[in-house]
Image (cartoon, rainbow, N blue to C red; front, side, top):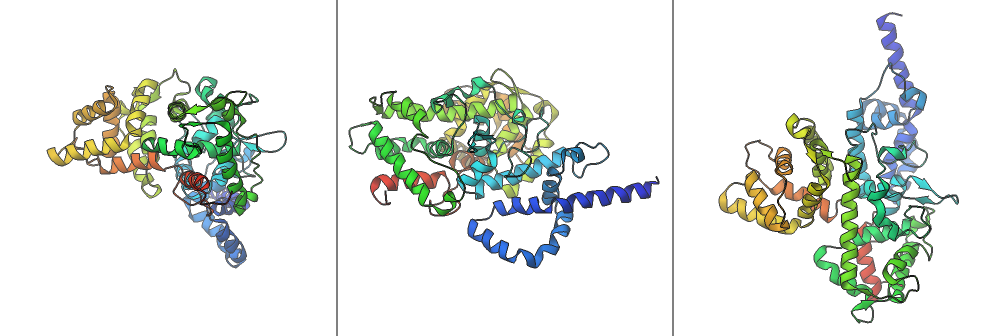
Length: 451
């Protein structure tokens, strides 16, 4: 076969693949649209259906999606690939950021949940929870290109990003039957708890403390969560998902807070300790995602990917380029769990970090590695690993002059810690996020919403 004939045959085969997979492409695009808009798009789809093959051939992201849907025998062939793995990873990283940022909680849950009960109910593993909350990138040691999938699509194998059992002991607090899975209602509770700012923990506690006794009993907790559950059922798009929120969905959490007999009372200190543990467990899950285990080491390049998790999607390419082009001596550095947890504690207190860095930069006119290290120690009380700070500068010192302008770094950290995974939407809207759920909880208790 001549080279020209072979090239023509290969091009025609690629086009057949794209044409065969254009429907899943549109399905993924539709998942990002509010339901009402989906209805409108579906009515007008026939008018521009001819455009789909052209769009699939021209748009890299759509091409990537199409390629991911190829049958296994096609994807394993050695003769050709539409896009290399790094390009597909980049495209899915941006696509999944949009899923987290623009989709409602039920769609996010549906996209990232990989487990199904014998009754056909979709459930999450702890690793799925992490991927639904944080814009993770496939670790360097992995062959994965994506974290989730829509119904009917090929899903990544569970081993591609599954943390070790030790990393998920915290979620046994939710797990009455020991199956290691998280229900949809438990997921809503988790993201609601995660959306509570540290300085507002006492306010959230008071919302549960209906009789102002200073403690929460099981009746008060059930009353608030029952109101939240009923509120969910009134939202039309949640009724269409098939997700169920039974009365015993949060039984594991009830036993953790109030004991097996339900007579224990929950104090503010215990509630704050629980929230702190929840945040710490997400940090540990993220570390295990990249390091493989709590005892492992994360590469400097993977730590850089953690840093850019909060970037705006429109800026993602430029930051991924910086990750790919970072100096080899930084990319191959090893980051331990302790170092990662220390940086996460600094990131969690982003408001204090912002005050410190802005004040110093505005006063002194510069912000160097040693200045950042001093600020980090003042805030966390721990010596920050200089390696991590060098990687921070490699990502955000865009002119590489050793002087960091903190504005972009702080914006990224605020997005990550504030609402990167759950945007501030109201419960009535299709794109309701966790902060909206927290507001709904407050409204339910205050009597502003119907029970």
